[in-house]
Length: 477
Image (cartoon, rainbow, N blue to C red):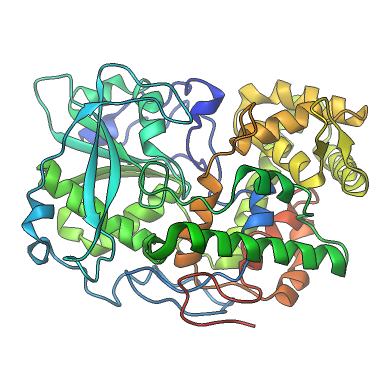
């Protein structure tokens, strides 16, 4: 399995070639991961997510309940066994016998319409899988049919996140794997709560921009208060916008949607390709429906044994390794270069930098701008240029990188990936330390990475603070 994180981002241009050797889907794994160089986005972002992923989240989706406030010991698997998965025989025929209305795909907010080979459709699924005969929602699909005569079946992709749009990403990625398409229909989807599948949008563009001023690494009680207040407001916005859907966007819910999709597509088994968070989704599917598992590739596997703190440590280590590789490529000593960037970020925290747009480059935005080009060596020259400009007092280039990461376009409109990520993760994750627990972790995280450690410690662990996440049944204080 290849080591990677997240999913390819079409907003950065075509996806570089990867996975050209597809013997893994022909019965051997020879060379399936050689030469992989693609831009990916992590499951837990560091910059914007640190400000947004902090309100008290808890509870579970319709796949089962979750414990509250635990932060020690290995993470339990997703609670997929607490409630029996409804079988297809429990579903009304309007779902099991539905015919997908495939049509030419239109443009999305993120990308132009794909080529003629791609067709889109909408799958109807139960809003609440514990009530399969109740209200339904639509799951957006995209597909390109196999080009050869010896078709095996459908190959379903999830590119990571959570919160990533498969409908947007699949055409870019599909262009790099023509050999796979000879024998498989290439299929992807926007999971429930994402993109065109009832996508969760928790606040407007002006509020998102205003939140950029919130310090993601609060240094005093006033900054900490603003940090938590902003996160609580974000959660309330999710509840207002998504309503009942917010309780039913868990990974378990999506895995059950996938099995209905398999059936409606006419496939006896599920052939699946999951990257990063997609490996977690694939694992949950295999646990729920082992009899339907076909060929599976799980790339950049999310550690199923890590607890909440362990995941955050893994994220910080991964960022730090990428930064050190970049620094070596420029002839710098990694330790000295790391200290230099940490000092730059500290100075930006004290005094945000001006930019050509008139907006300020905050520490949070600067860190986000550093993170984006670390996912591909092709981005390293941009990082060098942006850091040089920042050292000269101009934050414009780092801000442009941060905007790209945050899906902010030239008109000031933001994407919703981070909103969906928050909603899904808060239903899935059980273990979240308190603010005091998070503060106690900071020295260890700073040892792991002087640049990324503080924010990583404030991303996953700080997900449990005060109040409760919408859809939770147990308040916290």
